[in-house]
Image 1 (cartoon, rainbow, N blue to C red):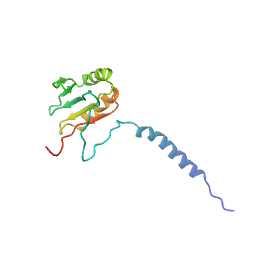
Image 2 (image 1 turned 30 degrees about the vertical axis):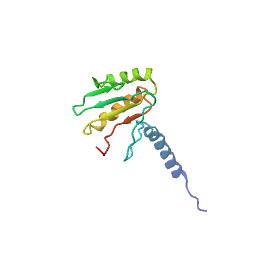
Image 3 (image 1 turned 135 degrees about the vertical axis):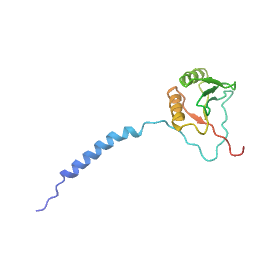
Image 4 (image 1 turned 120 degrees about the horizontal axis):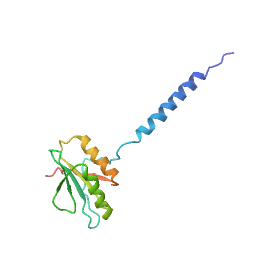
Length: 132
């Protein structure tokens, strides 16, 4: 009478279960970003709310433009507070990031994560159209 020993299969199954239980929470962290398509459309502002634009130039200086005024030089730590102040008065205001093309990707991602923590529901990335 031949029998199959299933104990090793149960051991492997339990090990895989533990591995999946550990790795699944790690897959769910991060900043949710909608990646742009090859062709982008013009962003329309809702009502009379002009978007808040956070810009980073080639010297890694941060600028913030609120209500179509002149860009104002700010420290990176100040950006979240300034955006939160605008959103507390006008909650439907869009927030856009415009960064110099040579800026490190990590700087832009850190800015996006900070804006998400400040309560911004979606962050747009500014691009230059190919027609210019």
